[in-house]
Length: 100
Image (cartoon, rainbow, N blue to C red):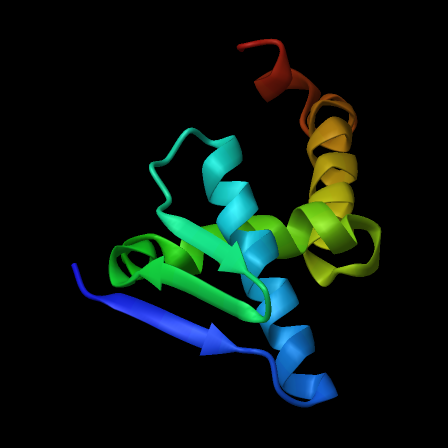
């Protein structure tokens, strides 16, 4: 696969490179073979990192900002509802809940 080289520039661009490196580290933590090097103000990596990039971008985002995302809010609320379903069924449909 072709190699891509990024060089540090302005603040916003550098922040995006930092975030990109965080995604690469998440990929490494899942034992993916991620070929990248950081030397001075350059980051060089293989373009094959983009094959699973979306999945790992979201995974990194959720891991980093878990409590501040809508994802975690939805998960917590879904878990609350799931726990109440048996109580609801027993109260609203007692004969169905007993299997009659």
